[in-house]
Length: 306
Image 1 (tube, one colour):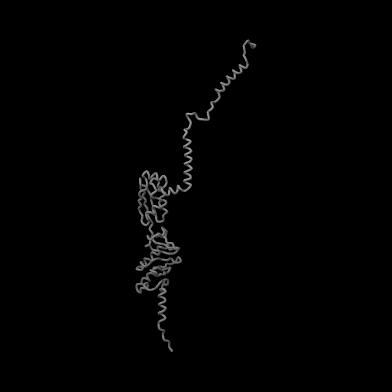
Image 2 (tube, rainbow, N blue to C red):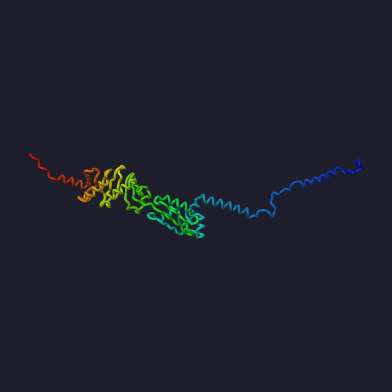
C-alpha cells in the first residue's frame, strides 16, 4: 500500500499496461503504409508485357527496313504508304488535265510536277507542284489545283521560243530577249532561226532584222554568226556572207541587186565579202580556183614588140 492507503500494484504490470496503451496510440497516429504492389484488383493485365515486347521488336524491324534502303525501294515502286491508302480508298490520280501546253510534252510536265500513277489526290502538294513547274524555263506561269476524287488540273503559259543559240558546241532555245528557255533535245525546234557565237543571243533582234532585209535571199539563210561581238556573217547554202559592222542592211540590199543582175550566189564560190562599201570580194571554191588558174595559164600571151 502507498502512503495514502491505495494499492499501487506491480510496477512491471503497470509498465506493460502502459506499453500496450502507447503502442495502440502510436498505431493510430502512424500513417498507413502502402504496399509496393497494387492490390489484386488493380494489377496490369498479363498480356501488356507481351504487347510491349512485340511493339519493341516491330520498331526494331521497321528501323532495319528503313536503314537497309528497302523502304525507299518500296516507295519508289508503290508510292508512300499514305498514297497507297488513299488510292485504296478511291482517291488515286486517274486523270491530269493540262491546258496551255504547246511545245512541252505531257510526260515532261507530269515529271516536272512530280505526279504519276503512284500519286493520290489528297496528298498531292499543289504548292510544291506549282513551284517545281515554275522552275521549268519554258513555263512562264502555272497553276495547279485538285478536283476530287480523281483529277489534277494544270493551267500553264509557255514562253515563246524565238531562235536557237549555238555556243561552244551546245545549242539552246532562246526567247526574243535572249533568255535561254530550253535545250535543243530533239527536232521540235528545228525550224527556228540559228545564231552562233558569244553574245549572239543578245543581238537576236538585229539578226532577225537582217533576215528581213535579205528579201528574196531570206529563205536561203541558214544561220548567223556574231563575229568578235561586232558584226554578222550569214551562212547561205554553204556560202559565207561577211557583213560590215555598220550598214549591214544596206550591204545585204546591195547583194540582192548583184544576185538579181549576175546570179553571183549560183557560182562556185564559198564567200562574199561586203565589208568594203565600194567593192565586192568573192572567194572561189578550191575546184573553181584551180580551174580559173588553169584557164589563166592557157591564155595566149600578148606578142611583144621587137
